[in-house]
Image 1: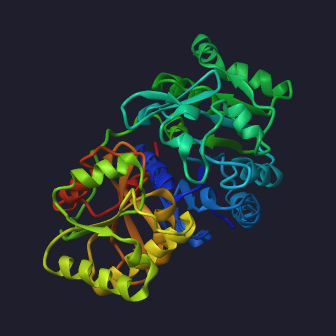
Image 2: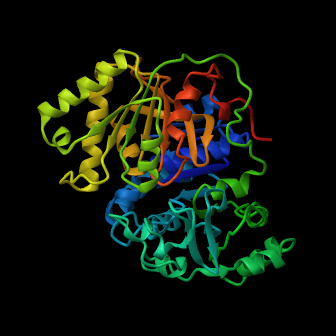
Length: 443
């Protein structure tokens, strides 16, 4: 293929992939997130040293993940990356049947023969922690919960987390024999962890799980893993955007974009809240700069009602109001999660066919994935960090009315209460149009 890159990340959903895109861009990487496998020309044209591939693996059956990863594998091999990052949700919610992390890793191991498979537990920047192999996460009550006792994740409608020990959780998906490097050992070996990992690899240990309880742990792990995969075999790392944090050094703080030239067009925002989590519900309630448009079950069940709802949203936008279309947490929409996301995607497309906006925000990982594909975008580049785990990206499209649209894709569990209003503020402040992850080479 003729175009090599240093770092490839495969996002198992769009919100997570856009967060990793932002993390790498803030570290100065020349990076772009593609919705379909790119060709060499697209990579060479921008001189990319990091490439993202967005997928919907998190919502797919294990068999479908294996088939689609088989299709991606030749591209990965052709690009000869030093690092392959399989980006998963920071809560690791998955199962042997749906979103199987083990199914994806099995295909990657077969095709890439990685020097090491490293699982990085925790993302402290999002209050996700891994201690002695067990995953913990902050809840909507502000407290830290073991993931199998988390008030939201233990009751996840598709992949409830019933096991906190990542070794057991991932072994059930076929990713077995993970050797744990717990946080006390990481701290004790701060200066010698790389040597220790090298010794373990020479002893035949090829799968490891690393605790991460704070940013210092990530720095130590990143320094230890940074030199792996230099013998022509890549390093395969499974984890959240903490992987990019660990391997990318200093990051610009949230809200600080890289220098660039030009200014973007100010305009109206459409936000679709397709998550019914308590976090997203609080964000919907806190929004003050939008016309709220609650989505009733009839709006998704009946084509006429859906058209009328889309027309009402478009009319509000045409009248100069930002629109927040949102699900109601207590309503029964009488369809599966995948069906609901598809119907929401059709609804957003119907609104945008009637009225163009400068910016679109979507809350909900699975919903974001389906909407972005439904709208026909080709790739995303990072522009600005809006909140912890929430980035604003610039979308490329073959459709003139959507090319250059700003996107905010956020998981249902992340972001402050004011994140939607902050999105409006960002879109109505003159700032760079050139995606900040593309302005200079990684040092």
